[in-house]
Amino acid sequence: MIHDRPRPALPHGDHADGSHVHLPPASGGPADRPVRIGIGGPVGSGKTTLVAALCALLRDELSLAVITNDIFTTEDAEALRRADVLPHERIVAVETGCCPHTAIRDDIAANLDAAEVLETRLTTAHGPVDVTLVESGGDNLTAIFSRGLVDAQIFVLDTAGGDDVPRKGGPGVATADLLVINKVDLAPHVGADVDLMLSDARARRGGAPVLPTSLRDPTGAAAVADWVRGVLATWRDRSVLA
Ligand SMILES: Nc1nc2c(ncn2[C@@H]2O[C@H](COP(=O)(O)OP(=O)(O)O)[C@@H](O)[C@H]2O)c(=O)[nH]1
Ligand SMILES: [Mg+2]
Image 1 (cartoon, rainbow, N blue to C red):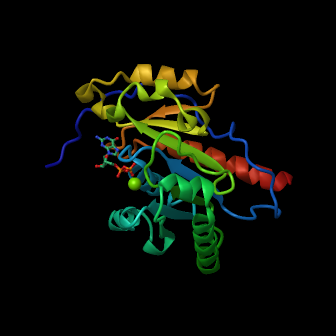
Image 2 (image 1 turned 45 degrees about the vertical axis):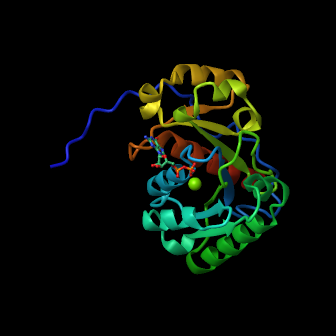
Image 3 (image 1 turned 90 degrees about the horizontal axis):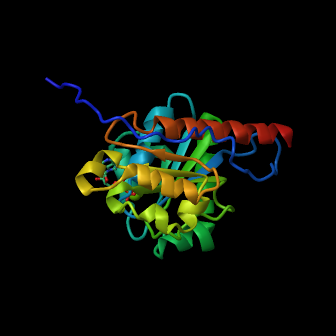
């Protein structure tokens, strides 16, 4: 028989309702397209796991699309399909064939094309898409998304990557709209000080939110899902006001 295991209390994260995100002006009237949210961060920090968790938490209330980026494979998209977090037609892989950050920052055409084709196809078949999640291929701390590709972005670090990483900073840590510090369940095993990671991160982010997560817990991404809801609400307001 399966029993619930006691879970360590999460360190305190910020209130992250997405309202601080600065979105571009609407170009085509109300809800002219889904809000696109990028998920970046180093290899293995938990980006695909976070995408899966967000899909599981949001799929009953929102129409979702997912784009993954891998260098030479479609592995992340296949992993998400295997996990059955969304109907398979809602998940598309981009094979970047190049340095991952090039495809999300410098030459975004393949990702933009993939987003437009996927969103149009899903809208025709099922009605408007609310949120498109774009997972970057894992890269270093400088890899952030172009604002021409996504409207808001999450940067994912993990405790096992070293608790000095937030202190070292870089554009992902400093400028992402939401910073997630994942794998807090592993912190005691890898000697990472989560409170230090949170305070170092906050010191570099000028008030933008930081959330600790453990995605071992199926509801571990609940606060991130709330942030996504907030970003979508801000996106819709901005469309109505335009
Ligand atoms: N213990 C623990 N493992 C995690 C957590 N999040 C992700 N993982 C594991 O970390 C590994 C890498 O995750 P993945 O999502 O593929 O990372 P990505 O390369 O950033 O997409 C996988 O084995 C995940 O199961 C977490 O919060 N806690
Ligand atoms: Mg991945």
